[in-house]
Amino acid sequence: MHVVTPFQMRRIDQRAIEEFGIPGIVLMENAALKTVELVFKYYPPYNWNYPYGSTSLNKNYKEDSGENTLVQAEKISNVLVVAGCGNNGGDGLAIARHLFLAGYNAAVFIVSEGGRKPKGDAGINLNALLSLQESYADSDALQIRWIEKRKDLFALQAALNKTHLIIDALFGTGLDRPVDGLYAAVIDLINEKQNGSRKAVPVVAVDIPSGINGESGKVMGTALRADHTAAYGYAKPGHLLFPGRDYAGRLHVVPISLPGDSAEYVQADMFTLSDEEAAGMLKIRPRNSHKGTFGRVAVIAGSTGMTGAAHLTAQAAMRSGAGLVTLGIPSSLNPIMEQKLTEVMTWPLEDKGSGHLVPESYQDAEKLLKDKEALAFGPGCGKNSGVLEILRNILGSFNIPIVIDADGLNHISRDMNLIRRHKAPVVLTPHPGEMARLTGLKVEDIVSRPVEIAAQMAKEYGCIVLLKGAASVVAEPGGRVYINASGTSGMAKGGSGDILTGMIASLIAQGYDTFDAAVLGCFIHGRAGEQAAGHLGETGMTAEYILNAIPHTFKGLYELTK
Image: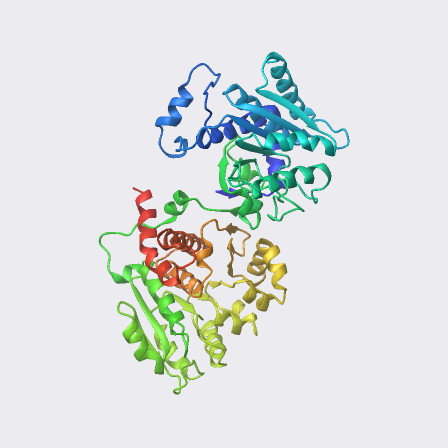
């Protein structure tokens, strides 16, 4: 699915209004209704009173499958909406109207600093809500209050003690300044209430959690943590990059009836994947196949003390569907790998008894690579100077796609022009520390600007860059950028990256486009990690369990294609 920046989203909205004649108030109403559906699904009301003709929506939510299924959830009655005075606040006011009419008690708090009031479409929704309150003057089920001074926070604090759900509609994705004043006080009060409670009140964020930058995912001074976020039209980078991804909770990208070519119109070059989209990228494995059909992978990895990296890389290549995998290993370590590996073949590389690659290893490596479709190079190779010598010869002499990781990256950082010399695709898979060595930048800069830095390197060196992290980024020279949404903290263990390297090399050997192989490998790697964590928990799982989960993950995705 496409990912658009806040600026691109503004252009999309503007085009829908000006060129297609879709009034802004209609887009706001569509956004509100989709958020209300989300609330119905996870936090249904005690007294269902949906006003539009029948209870068919209630019925559908009980009987439908998939995304429209009414989950097993505790029914609630009291909803608190905190709204700003901009369009995000207008969304919140429309949501409050629908929730009240559906049977919830709605307490609405509008934060107005400096006398500002909702205008335009937001003002229309405010007037509609005020009229509704007047019509139900004999009931206190709909309350509208203003927060204009610090003393008004006492009423909010009292309402927080009674509410069962909070709708966050203070700021949208365009926030580009630190949150301060009354807005910061409101956010801090809600966070304080959440942190001090035994059972935190769930929060549904309108488009993005207030206080999160929609471009970078950074916290702009302070921010609200949501359990669910309804992202309107498209996901934004701030939903997927940390810490914004943590604050967003479960992300729901909901349609608001924008023109279907909107992403193309703004030339959106970022995307992420759903399970269905990943499944759609998988190649059909024909029945009349043989092991050569699915590619031959070479792995050059390992040194004394690092045989595990070689084992994980080679096994990951095999378990990701390659027909044949051969591990090139320093010759003195070959007996160890012969015992550790069954399906993977080994190929001893001359090491002069050192347990490390030496310049003389290249002659054996040359023979290894003659009939291979992809090479995984670097995991556990060590710091010996022979590694760079072999890498230089391979990049200069062989027309083979290569995935370079770990020690391979550390060595190539000494001569980055080698990448340009290679006549076949190159995939670099650095973590932020390795990226710092490749670029000369500080780790903090890389972590704070992963999309920009990965894209810049991909363009400069004409290669695929997979910048690993909690939200890995894959960039290609043409400008496309993938932001990965799969994975778990349990994958922050030694060996996880080695597995990813083997997976990508395997997919390339099977005939996948190099960029697609990096994207798909990254996504499936994360899903396998999630599956491992589901069985063992994040604390105790190791890379070996990610390895074991790879076949199950592929199986699950292939089943989605049936």
